[in-house]
Length: 160
Image 1 (cartoon, rainbow, N blue to C red):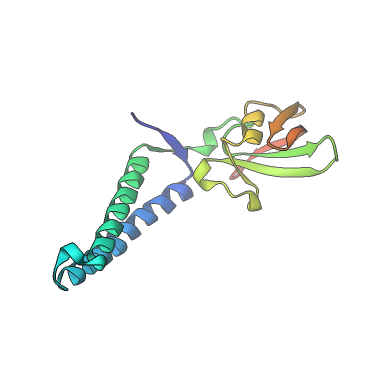
Image 2 (tube, rainbow, N blue to C red):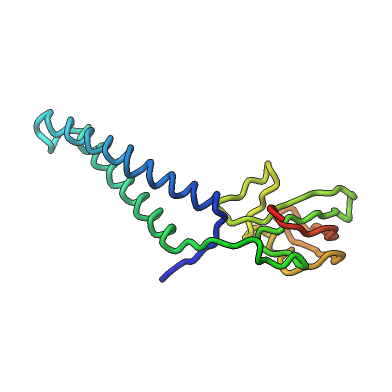
């Protein structure tokens, strides 16, 4: 079953770089560790060998999962997205109607989320509540701490 997800060029490049690091640096390193441990004699009682084999298994699993994610990854052309409503890659200026504070969030794929710099996962409760909404709309969003009401002031694109 394919699990297609959408990414920015930067997010896709980051995953490709990680895969390259795992296959060209870490995989050969673990192979050397296994060879060195094997040279130490009896493998049935060799803790170093067992640990290196376990590390190899974990690394191969990580590589396999990353390859699968990359094979199902799709690049989004942000220029073709509609600015009239909140979508993935929208930057949304919101007003918290309770305390009047203004916040800006950019809705991004899960793996690119970083709340410290205002990048909110598109699968988060706030993002889900904003998707499809338009400027001027007021939305009540249920979050773990309760309900928050936001008014949408502005919608733009990261690169528009």
